[in-house]
Image 1 (cartoon, each protein chain N blue to C red):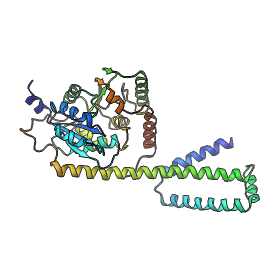
Image 2 (cartoon, rainbow over the protein chains, first blue to last red):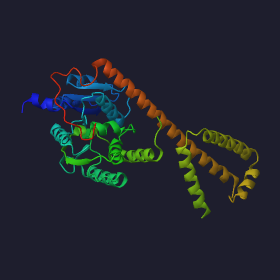
Image 3 (cartoon, rainbow over the protein chains, first blue to last red):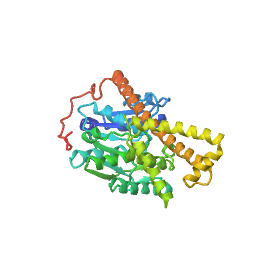
Length: 237
Length: 130
């Protein structure tokens, strides 16, 4: 398949790449995405490094938060930017640290195109997680179990950054917690909106870089706290 | 028995108070309570015997314990109140920052999806009715 026909196929898709201080790899990640996807928006979450320039040079649109807000807020900003494109039908969320594979994103959008689903979630437990530590595996399993209990959604991998959403779902999602709790918010929205969802196996490439950039496992305590507080008390605009 | 009932009531008051944290009357009540506590603290300093008598009335051994309970309650309510205030402010900061960020991106590069080479691809109908 030549590049032209691929690009045509995905001109209705926006890839949202939230990032905070990811300058060393973001150019590479964006370049990989741009081989297939015309529309990539990087949300620079208040980094003071050359992130925006690197992403722009690689062919992405860049939306810059003047101050650092958190990954959830960055995702929501990217989604709202993509929604401004009236031709947009699908949104993909894609981590900036190079742990996801473009081919997985392509498969997920193709799955949305069948019309059978509103949300496609990536799962490293159905697929491969290269180089994942034992402790991390246990923690993520526990998080998936917690999602099953609280959101009533039987996911195998609650905290995978690779997802594909239809426009309608993205429009109604509204990620309210600025921090790292967006995975729980998305599963929560799946239930609230009674969305049709599916998990597909994806490969996560754990590198020294992504491990160093990734969250510390103890942050799961903060996430659980944020989600509970949000569910119990809501928030004001 | 009475302890568990009291603790339960405290928790209910906390959750209810925070859920209705925008209520004007409640805010006024909190401030009056804080003033009352300050008055109580002054009395406790000047007349310790009085707080002890008060403590005995409600079945607590010492006046200082009564003051301690009041202080702990005030601390919990104040901390929780401030936490939620920060959260609400953060939420507004997010909205403002997002609006600024998107506006600047639009000013710098035009609306998303425009200026792309080639004709738009034929669109299939959206499953979710997008």
